[in-house]
Length: 336
Image (cartoon, rainbow, N blue to C red; front, side, top):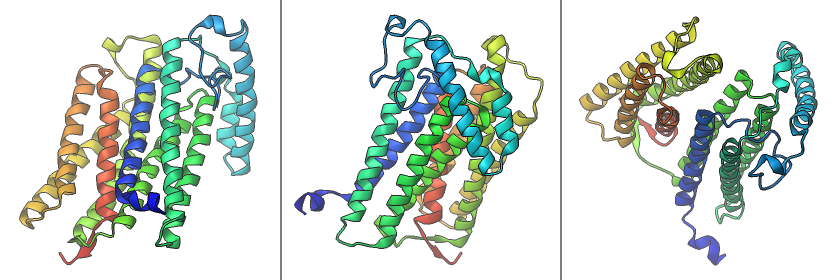
């Protein structure tokens, strides 16, 4: 296949990774602007492939209609949760009538969410084409095909779970799992790049273990970050951004403590790399990103969470996570 020969497969997989990161950025912007419920249904938006631009394009009882649709979806999702043993979570969803609230139409929120979905669909297309490239590869290695197919399954599950985020009116724990799946997708795609590139570069075994520890703590920090964001959102329902005061500091303290640990972790990596005279660009990029993340986090805390810094804070965390995954899988192990 001449067409196949012209494709630089490694570059293609890097482009796919960028597309996945763009979905994360788009999701962060949606969260920042409060547009998560801009489209009350999924996969369409207000039952349309191209969403409305005016409330006049909607029926008079649209809020009541989509509230009833949401009730049916919550019932189905609750039944699913019960089948896998999460009875308490299922009952919480069924008993919380606030989840049935349908927000008034806002054209900006609707189109922010719609563009987010379009970017997600584009990333899904890249992932599907990646599977086809693996399937028709001259080197038909089963692992390549299985990795690509596994990412398709994960993407499909993420899309379905995203629809549950909408159906449950952005319940915090549902959104948190949505974010964790996004991080896993990034890690999976980086592993695919690693498998195709066949690197012979080596790093000390200590860095491998350090990367594994970093992956765990960054995932933990991302989860904490979504909880912090939820507390902030709940506060802003009845209060002003310029007067942020919180009763429960436990999540904030955990988030900041983990951030401090990651800064110390970055310092240790830097000292180790300097002493060992390592020339691994991922290490130095990671160190820079962690310190930049700390600075952005400080600005967020001290200046009442400036809107533009919120998506930046998340994307830096996700890129740092990607660097750690690459350190973990891309390099072969050498003796320390």
